[in-house]
Length: 275
Image 1 (cartoon, rainbow, N blue to C red):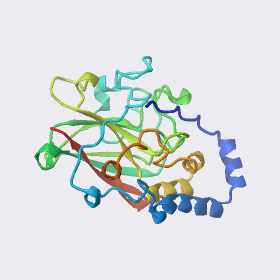
Image 2 (cartoon, rainbow, N blue to C red; image 1 turned 90 degrees about the horizontal axis):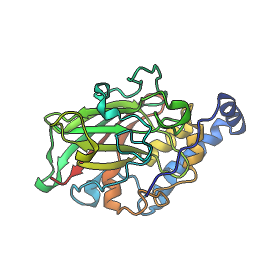
Image 3 (cartoon, one colour; image 1 turned 180 degrees about the vertical axis):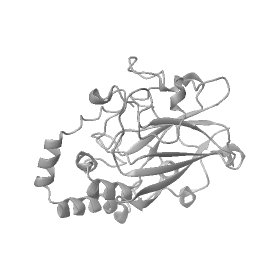
Image 4 (cartoon, rainbow, N blue to C red; image 1 turned 30 degrees about the vertical axis):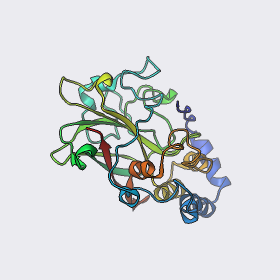
């Protein structure tokens, strides 16, 4: 399925009006309810996932759509640049633009570690593969696509897995926009034959952000007000991408996180690939 287009970012005036209309205590209470309520009720696919072992052995991540904003040379919007062809995309810190623009994405810091494993041989590490990670801003916009971000290319980058099959990215906690549950996009490529090319990719998938972290960030961190409203209207079960995945697949796709909105988060996820 295709993804809905994220809403435009709120102006500073709109943010101020929103803060006045919703006192912080009420906003925080709402966020905590959204972040923990479904898990406490034990709703299918909505529990605090991230530990695939609770639902079975390591599994291959399901193939998912790249969505309408991949900038990988194969998206439906042909006017967008192919960042995979740029040497500047090979980086670990995704917060600033690298293609000549000077913008920096603001938001709660997120240090994300991704471990690639081959599920066909007992989840052995897969060193040497390239991971392309991209995601939206705290307002739900995408660099190179959203109107005011077309000259920016932040929150996109590629890293090559080390001997342990791991890559690490420094980025921000993504926002939530109408019609989608909070997520990150990734693609896995071989590193032979030059720059990553879409027609050679091994996997396109999406990662789920855990409910407790979403509730805390959207309820407490400045700049995520529009995300809180979108998050209140979506769930994994309603999401057009994750909604038909099994509980085991959701568990495998969910990032395990530790941290706090005031200090940032550290997240880890294992990405299983069929060798």
